[in-house]
Amino acid sequence: MLFSAVTVLLVLAGWFYYAHSVSTSAAIRHAEAFLFRRMRVVELGKQGTYRFFYATNRGLQPGGGNLEERFDTDRQEELTFGSFDAAIEPTLGIGMILNPTEWFQNEEIKLESVSELDRARFVEKLRGFVENSPRRSLLVVVHGFREAFPSALRKTAFLGHVLDINSPVLLFDWPGNQGSSLRGYRRAREVAEASGVELARTLGLVIREVRPDRLWLIANSMGAQVAANAFDVL
Image 1 (tube, helix red, strand yellow):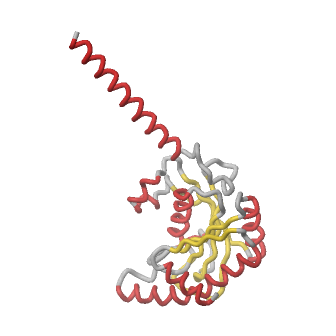
Image 2: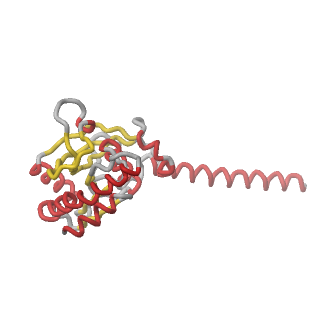
């Protein structure tokens, strides 16, 4: 009798543990598989593909080839505007933030297209996404030290995925990849301080012509120096 009771208790305990673990695991998988995604306003016709925007003060090399590979490490006063589409695999989980190298795996975040837009077209496209968002909002992202243009695009897509806000996202990209040495760090600091002017112009353009009701800014690492200098200019 005692053996039977213990057996029943063990079976029940095992069942409850299995049901709890399976349901929790399934919920996590579903959440990471976009079944509960709120990031809908920037989703394109193909599920898992999202539209983002960028403004950059990088120099742009002439010629053919992929646009994202033609941006160099020189700062210029003229801004270049555009948009990019990123396909994000449902298997990409929030836990992958602990392993930054995974951000750059093509099977997880793939740049579908990177396009350059003139100022008027950029404002028109971005304003359309802002007006269709629930809060008429815009998130501006500024990355930091050692960031190249292609990686800045992928990290912006990843950040949008992690935050999961139903809002368009604008990357302000600056040439932070000046080298990993102390000299490169100092050079990047100088470029960051100078780039505040272009970020201020970008924010001014957004405020005057895109006119979101809510404007959020995230500045990572040395990108905070860019933001601080932009506020000084503004």
